[in-house]
Length: 132
Ligand SMILES: CC[C@@H](C(=O)O)C(=O)SCCNC(=O)CCNC(=O)[C@H](O)C(C)(C)COP(=O)(O)OP(=O)(O)OC[C@H]1O[C@@H](n2cnc3c(N)ncnc32)[C@H](O)[C@@H]1OP(=O)(O)O
Ligand SMILES: [Co+2]
Image 1 (spheres, helix red, strand yellow):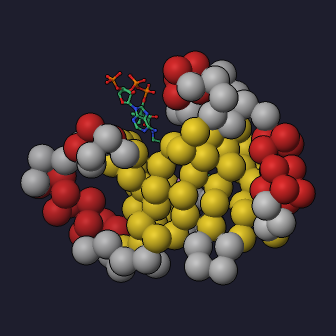
Image 2 (image 1 turned 120 degrees about the vertical axis):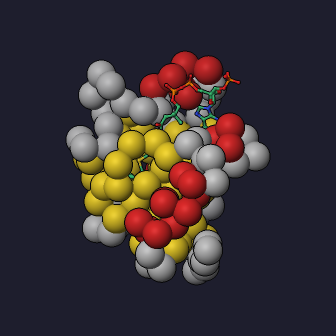
């Protein structure tokens, strides 16, 4: 079902400082910050030759990454995103198998449909699916 690794997301309380680590220390191509109020995050994209890193900072008072940062104030790996050909079919198949699907399919940071799967059903890792 899953295809390419689309991105790995890292939660941070200080987006500017984290972007500087990737840009200035690691020498990566780093975007300007994009606010995504529908997702409750501001994101910076780090372009790597074979995938992307998303640096995420909470946006608004109901951010889905706020509780994570309370537990890990220095930040950390938040989710992995795999590409699928048909996101509705993937969601339905996983839900039928008993996996917890978190909310509805939404349009994600790359303008494509995305949906999240509960970390407790995926080896302790929050999984995002993105339609390729
Ligand atoms: C940039 C836009 C978009 C894109 O296109 O790429 C994005 O990536 S947006 C990214 C942010 N959006 C989301 O994360 C949406 C989905 N997330 C959620 O629905 C919630 O965050 C959650 C996963 C259900 C957790 O909700 P929360 O209120 O934080 O619940 P708990 O704190 O009670 O956590 C329950 C349980 O799960 C563990 N947990 C939580 N988050 C993670 C995580 N990221 N990775 C691994 N494990 C996680 C948490 O520790 C709890 O465990 P226990 O303490 O053992 O119960
Ligand atoms: Co993501």
